[in-house]
Every structure is written in structure tokens, then in C-alpha cells.
Image 1 (cartoon, rainbow, N blue to C red):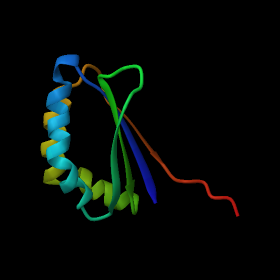
Image 2 (tube, rainbow, N blue to C red):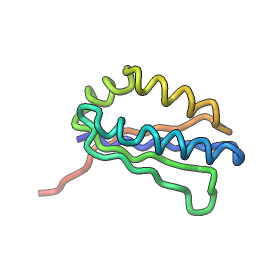
Image 3 (tube, rainbow, N blue to C red):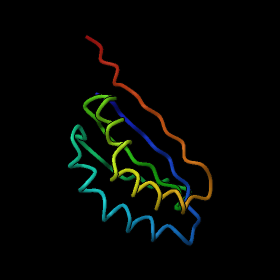
Image 4 (cartoon, helix red, strand yellow):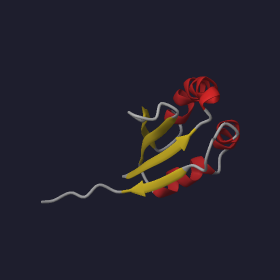
Length: 97
């Protein structure tokens, strides 16, 4: 299981545009092979900063999505709205016996 967190800061006047892009693409992303969950989080103190939290079966599944036409289309539209470069992290859960 891979946990992917992507932090994105938007120009304040573009947040509504981003939310519409996310609303239109969320179900398609969640239906992509290997995606088990997708959530959108808004920063508590910076309302123009959002993060996506997604769970993927494997890094290979995430990479297949990142190389897909769907990702290319969504990311191109989203990236144009940024006020700064996005940050992304990939994690795995630590489980203790």
C-alpha cells in the first residue's frame, strides 16, 4: 500500500476553478486501477492551500496513473492555477506486530 500526499497552493482567485476540476475528475481518478481512496483536504489556516491524500495498491499503480492521459489532462489544468510549485510525498504505513 502506497500513501501519496500532494500539497498544492493556488492563486486565491483560482480556487473555485480548481475545486470544479477536482469535482469533475475525482470519480475517474478513484476508478483508475489501483486507486483505493482519494480525499481532498483544505489547509486550516490557508484556504487557498489544498492537499490530495490517496491510497494506491502499489507504486506501479501510481506510476501508471501518472503516465495516463487522465493524469496529463487533470494535472495540466490544475498546474496552471498554482501560486507556487506543488510538493508531493509517497509513504508506506508502519505496522507494529
